[in-house]
Image 1 (tube, one colour):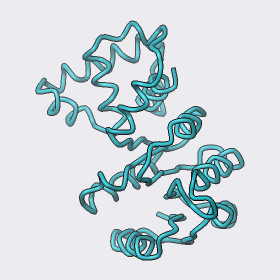
Image 2: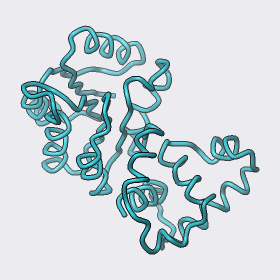
Image 3: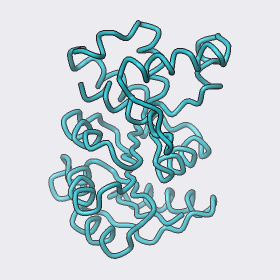
Image 4: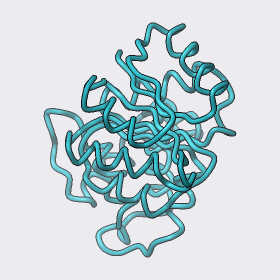
Length: 214
C-alpha cells in the first residue's frame, strides 16, 4: 500500500512513517505543508493520503483544503484525516462527494498501532474510519430531515457504529444483540434511505454519508 503523508511536526511525522513501514506500507512522500501535499499526490498517485488538518503557513485548515483540492482533481482518492481538531465545514465537504474511502481520526484518540493501521487500510480499501467524537459532533450539528426522520433511535445508533467502521459482528457486540438483529437493523436502514442492493457493496458508506450530510 502506497501512502502520502502530510504532517508538519518532524518527530510525529517520522514516527508515523516508521509505524506505516512496520506494517508493510510504502510511504512514497512525507511532506509538511499543503502545497507539497498536492504535488506529492499528483506525482505519486498513492493508494491513500494521511493528512493533518493544520499545516503551515497559517496552521488553520491548509492540510484539509489541499486534500479536498486533490480529491477534486482525482475523484475517489482515499483520504484519512489525522487531527487534534474537528473542522466541521471541511469535514462535511470531504464527506459530501460520496466517492472513495474517507476517515477522520483525532490524534488523542489513537491508542495503539493496530487501531491506526486498521483505519489506514480500511480507508485505502474504500471504506470509512470515523472517530466517534467526530461522528458525534457532525451528528448533533444538523437537522434530521426526511428520509432520516424515519430512522429509529436504535437505527441511528447502528449508523453511528457503521461510521466508525464497525462490522456487523462488532455492532452486535457493542449493542449486545445477535448478528441477525444487527443485520436486520442495517437492512432497515438501507430500505429507509432508499439504497437498493449494490454489487459493489458500498451501501454502508452511502448510508453513513446520507446521514452525516443531511
